[in-house]
Length: 148
Image (cartoon, rainbow, N blue to C red):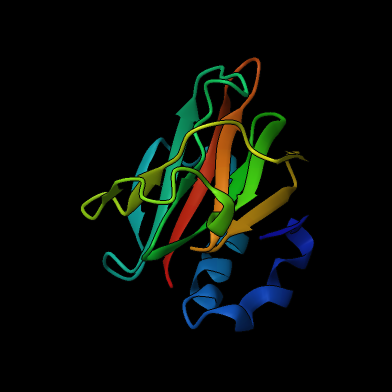
């Protein structure tokens, strides 16, 4: 997991061959002006999801992991709390993996919580359990799905 400010995003371009293209898109578009929906940048391997979430408590936010994709999550309209637990410590260990959605949900609360504000981002790798979307008001956000 990585949490940093957007102005430092380019420092992470070497982490994945598709990161440079994602970063170029993020730097050259008015993210707040993007409409809710999906934008394919490199077929299904690199997708920008623009989402509007509703309010969610820590108890409602489920820990999740992905096997195929890395998430770059960027809150736009407000502060978002994101839970984190190393994937190897998520329970139950035999939780069902949905291959179509590239998603496994786990039980319980996250071990740690991070505040991510507009102007910041979080990167979650397949080994990172995360519980995003914790906010009292909802948030417009960008979720870039990058094939690992």
